[in-house]
Length: 215
Length: 282
Image (cartoon, rainbow over all chains, first blue to last red; front, side, top):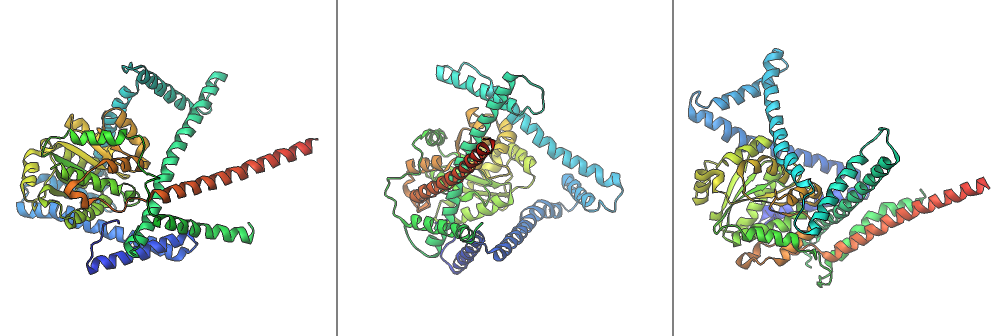
């Protein structure tokens, strides 16, 4: 069913291990906490091991070590700078504050700049433009555009707390909060369906892939 | 809580699982369908694929997360098979370790399903989060070990060799990050997304504003797309069996019952409290 495993011995073992761990995790629902805790440790350990392997095989060796060795000299300046950055971060407890803090701050600042500029250019501006109520061509589109703008305004008003306000503003804020609750409720309805599908996937794996019971 | 109630509460999850397991085994008659009756998302998706040029190269950003991947897995598999069936070439890249793990498994499944290997290119794992996305928007890096026409095409043309981007999202670095970091840098390159429901509120505005060309963001939209898609000779790549709609319905009804019971109990206790206050006042 999940199709991750083939038919050879290794895949058979993997299916059995996955089935046992699935039963252990489902057993957590019935109150068997100790085995469930071990399964969490197993997951954390496997994930850490996988990330370490990924870092070595797909990042450190092919993107740093091999290019540096291939150059045989200071040809790839950006890689040496990266290496110095790692050294500064790793040696921070022993290095003078300025030597460690400045390069690490520049690296963190650069990453934050990517995220922030992307959010402004890719989300804030286009979404502001898209949420402005415009004549969409058909009456339905225009009305829905105006309604969307109105609901956005009411929900924003719903976040006003501790600000002196009149009866109208209070009513609008209350309407905004109810609209917010309705939106979250609708979303939770979708989430209920999605979580059920995840549970059924596990049940289907146990019955179909492991026990071989067809449907 | 009385002993009987405590025992019931302890057994309830087991009963739920047993009920769902029994429902899962029921044969699907077609009377209950998971697919959404509103096919607009599926049609939009199919339209976006149909508008791709012949022999298109699609960059697949594959970063689902382990927890929610089963929700979109069947749809992702049909989408990949659909693209291959349309003679597209797929270049895969992952930006998260979880995505990489799942991608390796999916590529293994495609190999076992004898998908045309010449049309698949694994660009590997790219660290660096947003910075990595920016580097993809400039020039997707092709591993030195990669060979074949697709690798040469992507290495030579960079992002210009790509006709569309398909993002399989999870939690981190999903479609939102691609829209924010890649779209402003690549112009009108269409971005299609498959994402779990948990991302729907975040992604719907991008679809409405046209920043996403198409989105399959709910299980029902995904099922509608799968229902409408013919995979021809690649039908073997479709996941079988489909999620059990009867079991889903039974699960939903149980959830509604439990919620209703909790709500009713709360209402009853409030009424009792109001009655008590009334009596005290009298």
